[in-house]
Image 1 (spheres, helix red, strand yellow):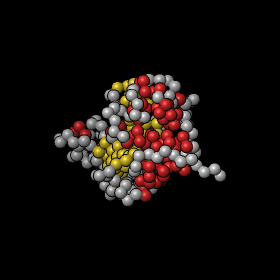
Image 2 (image 1 turned 45 degrees about the vertical axis):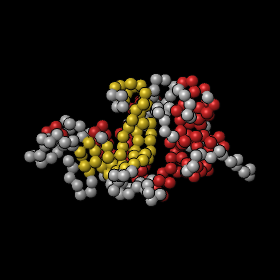
Image 3 (image 1 turned 30 degrees about the horizontal axis):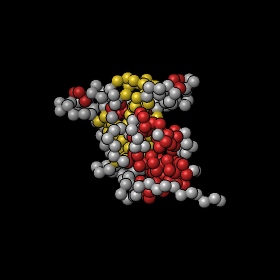
Length: 262
């Protein structure tokens, strides 16, 4: 077997981390692209991490530079498995005592949207983008994140595919709502060995009965927010909606072992 050609190293100490992924890439170009991508993510920039920014090039004009073109090919065309890369990342996090998740942490489920004007990109659709506070064309990604009082890091991310992409729309077996994706990611985190005390989500998730039911069926404890008008069962003398509370404090629906839902 031909020996692998050495790859230009990433800046120390990043090289020691990047080398842990080398066996997941089949070519020298992929190993180099991975190092350039990590370096671009971690280097301080005075603007958002667009492709040109990641490559350290100027906007617009710099898109033609070889370094930018090389990075774009690595991210969009090169044949490497992003799920295997993420699995290795999680293995390293779980194995390090400084970052290993513990039973006192929380698993946060959320989704975020980014504008996308083109029509050739997968998963694009018109929907409400909370980051911009309006309905626009874009891509929404459902994410999970582990956190405690001192540390947080992302676990999994799955793009939401609109119903229009499926032959039978919302009735298609392959279609999944954002809520269903979020519940599945919570199960994936548990299966990957990520310990946490509860799943945490905002009112966009917590106000949905199906989402809470999915978590309950999976045996996952949760603490989720409720919208101001959401009513829940409580003793007759207690407030039944967040708006009815005299303090104005947000309501949370809690499902933990031995807890009371409120």
